[in-house]
Image 1 (cartoon, rainbow, N blue to C red):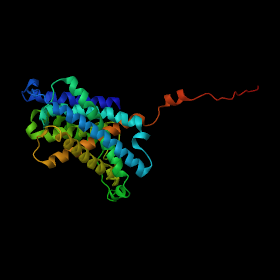
Image 2 (spheres, rainbow, N blue to C red):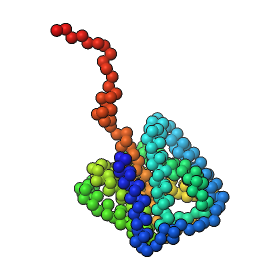
Image 3 (tube, rainbow, N blue to C red):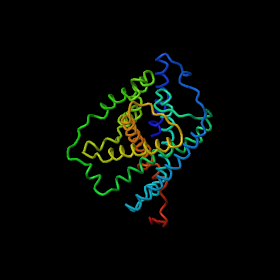
Image 4 (cartoon, rainbow, N blue to C red):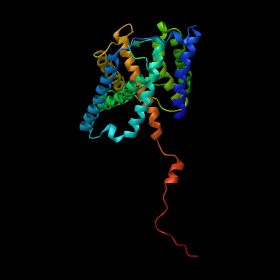
Length: 296
C-alpha cells in the first residue's frame, strides 16, 4: 500500500512539472501574485465548518436508518481516509497551478494556507464516503442498481497497459497544453490509481461492474456531485471563486471524477486493515495457561 501511494504522489508531483518545461515555459510563469483577501479565509473556515456539520449529521442519519455508525464503527479507517483526503486535496491544488481551473484571491503566506486548507481537504473524501453510505442505506436502491447484464472486462494487465500511458500523457500533456488537455489532466489521478491497482493485481472500484453491480459506482458519483456543489456554493457565498470551465456540465463531470478518485484512494488505504500477517498472529499468540506434565 505504501509503495503504491508513494508512486501515486511522486508521479503527480513530477510529471506536470516535466510537462511545463517541455512546453518551453518556466516555473515562475505559473506562480502569479494575487491580492490577499480576508474573505477567502472566512469562506474557507465557514466551508470547513459546514462540511464538518454535514458529516456529523449524515453519520447520525445513517446510524438511525441502519443502526450502525459508519464513523463510530470504523474510526481508524476514516482517520486514514481523512489524511489521504488532505494529501489528495493538496495534490489537486498543485495540479490546478498548471491549468487554472479555479482561482481564488488568497494570502500568499504558505503557513496561512496550510492552516486553513488542511481541515477542509481532510473532510472532502470522508464526506463523499459518508454520503455514499447514506445512499446505500435507502431500501431497494442498491438492488435497483444491479443489472443482470454483466460487463466483460479485459485482462487486468492489458487494461493497465492502456490506462497507465493515458494517465502519464494526461499529466504531461495537460500541463504542456492546458487549453486542450485540461480534462485529461483532471482524469489522470483516477486513471493512475486504477492502473496501479491493476498492476498489483488488486481490485478497483469498477470491479463490481463485471457482475452487473453498478450501485457502488453510481452512488459514489452522485456523492461527488453533491459534495462538490455544497463546497463550491458555500465558498462562493462568502468569497470570490472563479470556475474557468466551458459550462456547468463539465464541472459536474469533474465532481464525478473527484468522487470516484476519493473512493479508489479510500479502497487503497483500506488495504492497511485487510487481513493479518502470519508474524503478527504468532507474536500475539499467548501461552497455554495450564501447565502440561508429560510422564515418561
